[in-house]
Length: 164
Image (tube, rainbow, N blue to C red):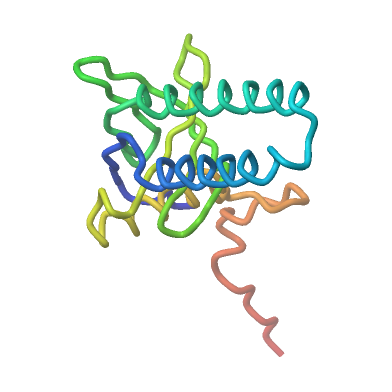
């Protein structure tokens, strides 16, 4: 019946996302190092080129990740980049406790992914953001699953027993 209070988070390039890209590059280098002796060179060269192109694209996407402010007003989500402020919908994709991946869809634009980290927020602000994410995605209503209206006055006070 109550929505969570207002919360906000600064969003920028994620250090966790960059660390993931570095681990990916290390695994890729190890694969190339061991694969040079066991694979035929033409197939390895094609696979290596494809992996390198995918990794370069991922790093480019990380470098150009959206920077802005994601805010829950108490009723709706708002995404602000520079002077552009838009209402949006937010879907929770991955939760790693100190890092969350959110899918953000603004009105009239395609969706984008945002990595939001605890390190960029204070502890209280991080908890408020997580409460807003959970509460906004699962709003409570005054009706039960079977359509029963629990806000009616006769449910608020117990029935009086009959006089004997």
